[in-house]
Every structure is written in C-alpha cells, then in structure tokens.
Image (cartoon, rainbow, N blue to C red):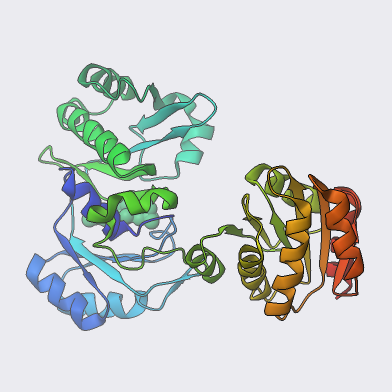
Length: 382
Ligand code: GDP
Ligand code: MN
C-alpha cells in the first residue's frame, strides 16, 4: 500500500532525510493559513496516491495568498488518473539547480535489496531506463550487510552527480536505506531529489509503499497516519475479515486455498478467456465461518457474475469444505452461482455432499479446467 507524499515526507523526516518545511490542508482557507506560516513563495501540491501530478496540473507555485486560493481551489476536487484530490500539501518553494532520482526496492529474484540512483531525475525513471540506461547507477544490497558507508559512497560516485551534492547524497541514501528497512517498506523513492543553488540536497517528492501485512509491527510510525487502509473498498472489507484478498477488475469471483492455487486459479480463468474479479486465498481452514466471510466479500462486488471455488484438500478435508460451502450459502444470500471443484483429501466424500445439494446456484466440476470454463461461461452469459 502506498503512502501519500506528505506521509512519506513525514516518514523521511523521522529518519533525518531533509525535506522542505510544509503542512497539510484540506480546504482553501487551510491552504492559505499554511502558506502564511511557511512564507511565500510556496508550492501547492495535490495529495493523491499516483505519480505524474505535476504534468496533470496538480502542482502549482503560488507567490501570495490570492494565488494560493486560486490554485488550492482548482486542485481540490481535481481528478488525477481516477484519484480525486481531497488534501493538499503546501510547502516552501525550492530553487532547483539539479533534479536527481533515487529509490530502494526489493529484487525478489536476486533476494537482495535494489537501489537506483540517477543524475537524471524529475522525469519517469522508466523513460531514463529506456533512453539512457547508463545514466542509472544500480546497487544490490545484501540485507545482512546493509548499506555500508563505503558502498553508499561508491554508489553515489557511480551516478556522477554534481560534486557539491556528493556528501549530502551519501548521507541521504543511507538514511533512506534505514527508513526503508525499519518500516518494512517495499519501495522508498525520491524523485526528484534536488540540489539547490546554495548546495543543499533535499527530497522534493516522496513515494513510499509499505508491506500492509507488516504495518501492525510499526504502530509507532503508522499509527499517526489516518487513511492508512486499502482504498479499494473490497480490500478494506476483506482485511477486516482477516482474508488474503486482492481486488481485480473482472467478473469471476475466486476462492481457493493456498496462495499458489489461488494464483493458478486466476491464471486459468484468464487462460479460458475470462476475467478474474479477485484473488482470494482462504487459507488452510476453509470452515463455514471462513467460507461465509469469503463469499460475503465476493458477493458485495457488483461486477461478480460467477464464483469459482477451487479447493485442493491437504490437511484441509474436502468433506469439511463442502459442508462449509453449504452452511455459508445458508448465511449469505448470493447474487451469483457457485462453481466448485474439490480435489485431494476426502474428495469423494466432499463431492458427494455437494452432489446432494447441487442446483443452478451450486454446480460441481471434477477438474480445474472444466470448472474454469463453466464459471467463465456463466459470467459471460449474464
Ligand atoms: P509528481 O509529478 O507527482 O512526481 O510530483 P513532484 O513532487 O515530483 O513534482 C513534479 C515536478 O514539479 C518536480 O520534478 C519539479 O520540477 C517541480 N516542482 C515541485 N516542487 C517544486 C519547487 O518547490 N520548486 C520548483 N522550482 N519546482 C518544483
Ligand atoms: Mn515526483
């Protein structure tokens, strides 16, 4: 999950990464108050969890209260790539001599942290990667060693920044690494990191993504932030109910046990020409309670036209799952039919239970492919 820029900056500040003085505002008048406190000129910045705000008109310079009023009025309520602006960050305007890029993320295939630093910042890093890949200095960091001062310096030197920016940047990348690690972030990005004419280096933007599953470990950091829940209403509901759920755009609701099988189920629905509405791993104990919760979240998704339940019994027994499905169906009034496939431990017993209860609303298939086909067909017809 992504933080807003102002949250990212407050987070950076805790770790000593320099940012410009600023404050949040939820109305035009609050924007003016903040600007008066900071002193002009200020920058009025839309707070949305999406990049490219500058190009979309969500970032404006203001030299006096009237200009703050004008820009704040225009930006509040603005739609930036489907995100409506409800909050502003007002900060002291900076003079920029150079714009750099720096980020830390995880390289899963190498099992190492991965950093990118470039003297060509302020623009999309994808574009730099494509047009001048040599302009990005890369570093892979072993989590056991961390980012040592020596490796930080070598990394910064490889990026060929203005020599005046070197020492400060070496310091900032180490702080960025600490904050990335300490908060269980999956991304910490500064674009642009600026050099000012008087030789200061500061974070002008902040993009931080957190591992939502680890947020509970850092209440002292994240507890201070409101709105730290998934903005997909379905994901918010699912997390309340303790489900491993990811919302997607399609019409076939998916429930599977185990993340691997859930992903295969998403794949097979795509493979037979359907569109999954979600990923949902119901985990080991597919009890009636659990199943009812899963069905509730899927049922509240207006796009869902068919529900594909795909269970492979290991420790979980298929007969228990089958009873769970039937009890859950008594509790939740479903808008779409279920296509269930049970295999593995006690599949015969499980299937027999489903067979007894089979109807238009609950259909059974013996293998994954025919179940996927049936679910996609139903979803396509309605
Ligand atoms: P993004 O478009 O969502 O990535 O928002 P940023 O915060 O990165 O701002 C985009 C661009 O606006 C930056 O790359 C700068 O060029 C410009 N900008 C933002 N703040 C300031 C500022 O204080 N002074 C100046 N001169 N430019 C700024
Ligand atoms: Mn930016």
